Image (cartoon, rainbow, N blue to C red; front, side):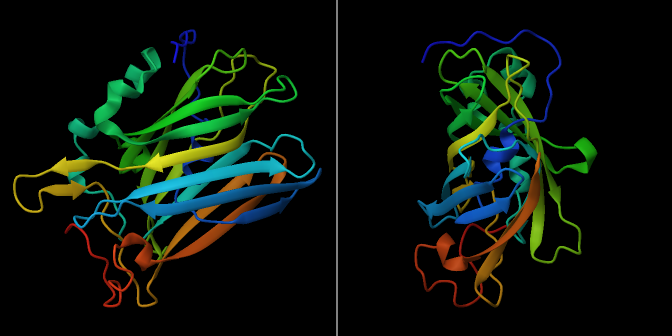
Length: 287
């Protein structure tokens, strides 16, 4: 892939595409019709758990497609919040400089390998720049862990979205989202991720919308001298009495009605053996 010229310097808007990409990764929702003034906004989301390890590691493979039934570009996302099931929290062992990415480094040089130690997910997106540009714009996306603290956040998530072709509409963005502990009132959830939502195009008259996304979340792993020798970055969620955990997402669109979705997922999706959750616990690395 040829190098992409860096944007002109200056302060960037932290609100970008990342909300549209990462918000879909853990929510396995089939089709979400949303009425709008023009037609129906449809979002297709799929997620699966793969490569489950006995020490607690696993991979999430996700994809999404968003479109208007009228054929027009989908509206931009105004805000997005993702809710994670209680117990699926970030381990404190990964909240160290060793696993942090400095967003300023990627601002200067959008090379994801510069933050390889903090990269927990990667994939591809397809952007819609119509009517200014007829052809869709393919781009790569990488997600990295970063130091928290802003507004009381437990951690920051840095997203690098970069066009993988020369395009007059888009080059790249470095975006930030924040991970917060849920309030005690949210009994089903332990953490929420507040996401940035708007890309910054190169041309002022261009509006960019998400058309498609594919994401592979491999997570982060810590090698330990004592048993277990490997530690996964997320604790496995508690399996409730009903043997299902709950994910949630709240979305707001520009020019369309917001949507909220809750998805219950069987505990067995996190396991090698479908019967292993009968005792009400999910095996994995200890907390």
